[in-house]
Length: 155
Image 1: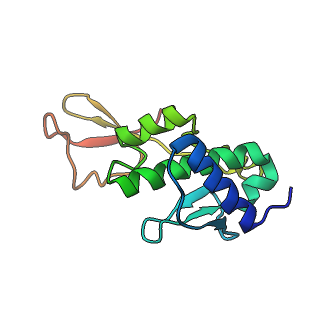
Image 2: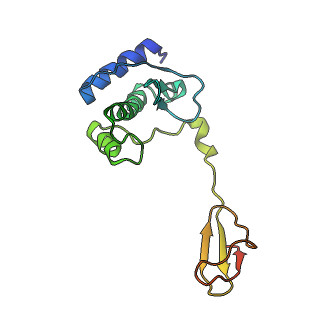
Image 3: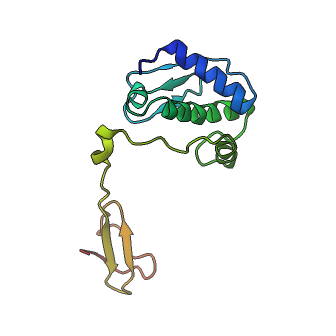
């Protein structure tokens, strides 16, 4: 499916009226440099950018989901409400409009999810175990409970 900026703009305006009962007064267009996200709302210009790879991989249904998600950011930001992913206003508007919280993973990205290395430490004094995603300097940091020496353990 070959899409154009005009088609994206028209679809965004239609979705804004249909799901939000508000006009979309800015630009929506394709940004070929986006790599890992489906789209983004720009806070300064209020424009919406869409990743062309998602349209090619998943079609119009995914595009509509991406645009609805970005329109949630757009309308909440312009109303002065919580427009960030963690805000309750944002989560509520996603539910009301049937917008997805995240877009699907591109087929080319599926195997590339970063595996987080987990490091475990055990206090030599009280035996408490600590789970960390980053290594810590055991000569600088001690157990928070008893101030004992921490030793890295392998699990």
